[in-house]
Length: 154
Image (cartoon, rainbow, N blue to C red):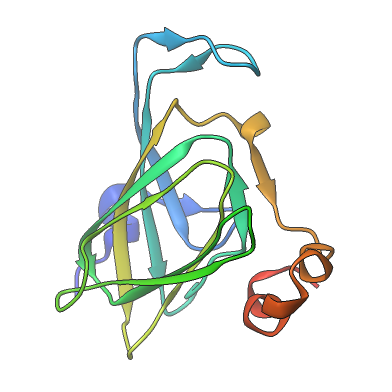
């Protein structure tokens, strides 16, 4: 197995896994929250040491493309509280769009040892547009609490 963390120069990510920004669009876009690059992109890796990511959301849409490994399961929650599950892998999808404002988390499944994805964020990522799910999200969506608990910090 390739050492993607070393090969791509990935660093630990605050939500879990490892990442490195690989692109920031040269053009800025006006948004309600200030100017943002037109797009940004990262590599994101989950592995056996860091097999899942925390539930979080962004204001911008995020496109996820599986590059290597998997399967990975993405758990999403839309603003109405509808749970979605999408598996990215060789025998499943290889692409996922998570609209802005939707909660999302990811994890390795099916005995996967790693999963490497590229993410494209548009308008581009800014930490001011990012939010980790507080414990209160379990109260906001009580019908999903059992399924989301493992993705929320204690």
